[in-house]
Length: 112
Length: 111
Image (cartoon, rainbow over the protein chains, first blue to last red):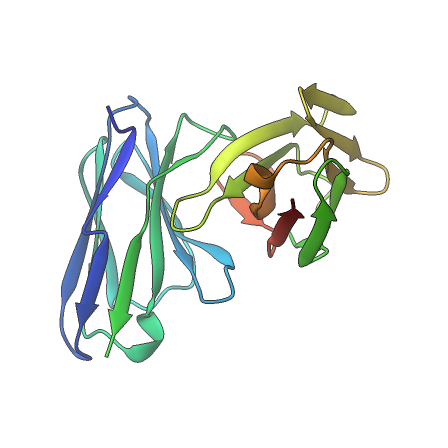
């Protein structure tokens, strides 16, 4: 009965690799987000989608590409991983805003 | 864009005492202010929120106050318990789906 789920929970990979993180929500929300949390715990929005349409795209390298196959899923694909990409990535969802965001458990990415 | 500042960055209190975390925002158009609690190894969870048409909101031991004129809002936790230990984030939104988060406060409740 998990509301927002992410896979994988942990991801350890080498520099230069390509990886994907998946997110699914079963709350019936129209809006989904990706956040990056760095080692100092700072939370920064990366992308936001409303009903599969990109509405927020912060200053994020174009190596990061979100994909929303339907409004319940928002996946994050990262090309050519760099050391600085190491962080915790959170997916979240909400009704059309501003409304409460429900966060997933996070994906801990470590780039070696 | 909006700029949200949060203080203090760390806070230690004795069990049973009160804890106060303060945030300021820059954009007077901000109208929604949620507070999130993040426990170790988990995602942030909403604990209380307030909208700009309200000055104060309370939920058991947790309260939030909003001063629109001064552009600041605060989280108050009374009768703190060890399970209140976590990182707390404030956030502000001017509408739509754009949220700006504070830098977080690590609260430790000492038994």
